[in-house]
Length: 209
Ligand code: GRF
Image: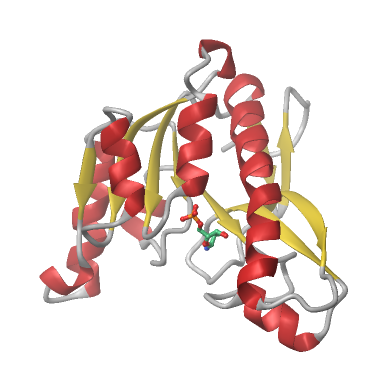
């Protein structure tokens, strides 16, 4: 049974999911708190949000390293320095490698109902396909693109006249709540993974990670 009290959150952009976690963790009964925020680029609102909350930040840019493997090791070391129980990739636009994935459980959030529409353009792809229901998925990360075991999902309607920005904003309102609720439950109740099955709470049986 794993628990998730100390969170390192990784961001690449506006950081509204991070903000939702920062706001939730202001209440000690939430059970988890953000101990550091990492990014793969400078000058983003996600880092500014962390600084305003007086949470330490770090930046590791892929372009500063000769190889992906070196970047993988560097970001894993920066994360490890904060001894997280759970790493949350919240709009972080990089796939994490083995040095991070082997050391920590990593939670990822995606703005579509996986396994439909994985990748960097999940909202655009769902809209282009013409689906009437889409949503968001919180999953444990593995080395694939949005292929890890699913922890939680929520549905969001696609409405006539939606463009990518409008639909993404509607999804993000649901996504923030789902992420906050899922991280909080994982922190307070623990979780187990058996194959692709993730269970939050104190269940008997199954493989424990
Ligand atoms: C989220 O919808 C996330 O799933 C996607 O990018 C968005 C990030 O939003 N990959 P924010 O930076 O948390 O505001």
